[in-house]
Image 1: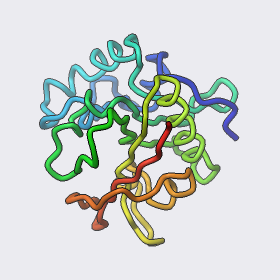
Image 2 (image 1 turned 135 degrees about the vertical axis):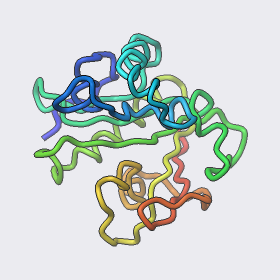
Image 3 (image 1 turned 90 degrees about the horizontal axis):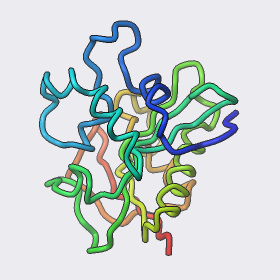
Amino acid sequence: MVTSVRAATDFNDVRTMLGPKRNPDARACWCLGHRLGGSASADRLRRGADIVRELCAQDPPPGVLAYEGVDVVGWAGVHPRADTALARSRTIPHVDDLEVWSVWCIRVRAGHRGQGISHALLAGAVEFARGYGAPAIEGYPLDNQGGQADRTSAYVGTRALFERAGFTKAADTGSVIGGYPRVLMRLDLR
């Protein structure tokens, strides 16, 4: 059971969620694809830890972390859309000119899945964005219509997860992940 969701300012906890699991020199995505854009170059993957360490020291930090007691069990990437590659996406539309925030990644540690942590992470991401004055927050989950999505594809969340958090569909997208279309879900925070 999640006891808290907090801003991702602790690099070591972010590394637990996003970094390589066994070999510290192994390649890891570090949740930088949507944040920085471009292809996942070998240089960026090598520098991922340094980049994320810098992001954790910024205000706002790069997302939120879920904890069970003192153990980190989940991560959600959330930030102003304008500061992400989503601002330049050809497949994820802009609904309007609001300075929205985006949730692009929701990850729960193995052994902790199926316990509602993704729901707590999304709620925490909403409160995080609200605390920074965001007028609205968007997510771009897959619309699996109740079908089984593989974990690799489900990092963007599902439409049902976002609907349970009060988001509504604002637009279709031109993006498909894991064989499922993605939809733009939005929650007004004003």
